[in-house]
Amino acid sequence: MIKTTAQLAVMRESGRLLAKVFDMLDGFVSAGRSTLELDSAVEAFIRNELKARPASLGQYDYPFSINTSINEVVCHGMPSAKEILKDGDIINIDITLEKGGFIADSSKMYMIGTVAPKARRLVEMTFEAMWAGIRQVKPGARLGDIGHAIQSHAQANGYSVVREYCGHGIGKQMHEDPQILHFGRPGTGMELREGMVFTIEPMLNQGSSKVRSLKDGWTVVTKDNSLSAQWEHTVAVTADGFEVLTLQTQPGE
Image 1: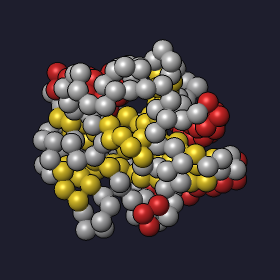
Image 2 (image 1 turned 90 degrees about the horizontal axis):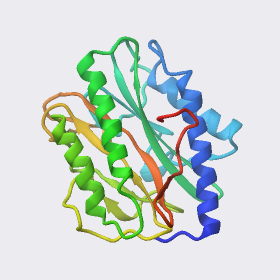
Image 3 (image 1 turned 135 degrees about the vertical axis):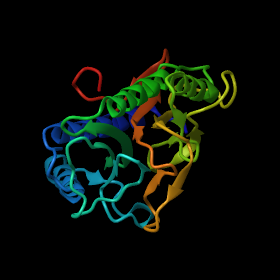
Image 4 (image 1 turned 180 degrees about the vertical axis):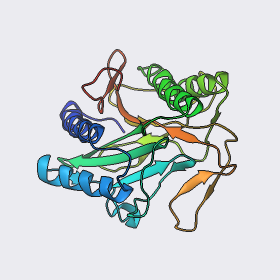
C-alpha cells in the first residue's frame, strides 16, 4: 500500500494527465452530445494527446473508457449513442488513466444548461462532502475519520450516503487495499501512513441511500429514482497532510 517517492512521482504524473482530460471535457460537455461522443473524445485525447492508456477500457471486461452517470444513475453508467445530454441534466463522468504503470482515478459532476436549484445544491454539497473527507487525511488519522466527515456533512444537509460502493487504494492496480468507506465513526479503522494513495469518491442521494442494478450488469440507479451525485479524487498521504494528485488547474476543482 505504501508508495515510494519514485512511485509517487509517477502517480503524480498520471494524476496531472487525468486532470487535463477534465480540462478538455470542460469545454466539450454540452446539451445535444451523446454520452458515446464523450467516451470517444476521452479515449482519443488520452491515447493521442497524452500518450497514455484509458485504464477502464477492458478492466473487468468493461467496454468503454469512461462511466457516464446521469441524474438518478448512481455510478457505472455506460455510454450510449442513444443517450443525449439535455438541458437540466446532471452527469458524473468517471475516468481512469494509466501512465508509466500507475493509475489515477477521478470523477466530476457536470450541470447541463439550466439546472434546477435542488439538483445544483446536491452537486455542490456532494463536492463539499468529498472535500470534508479529504481534509481529514494526514498521518495518524483513521479511515473512520474520513467516512465520518463525509457522512456528517451529507446528513446535515439532508442527503443520504450510498454504502454499497466506496473509495479504494490505487497504484499499479485500479483497486488496491484499503477500502475507503464514506461513512463511519471517528477514531476507528486503519491508521493512515505517509505514502498511502487512495480515492475518496462519495455518492450522495437526494432520497433513500438504497440502490439497484440494471440488467446491463453495470449501471446502478437510486431505488426511489431520486437524483444522485458523486465527486472523486486520488489522494496521497504526505508527511504533514495530503496531496490531491488529480486536482485541476482551475480553483475549486
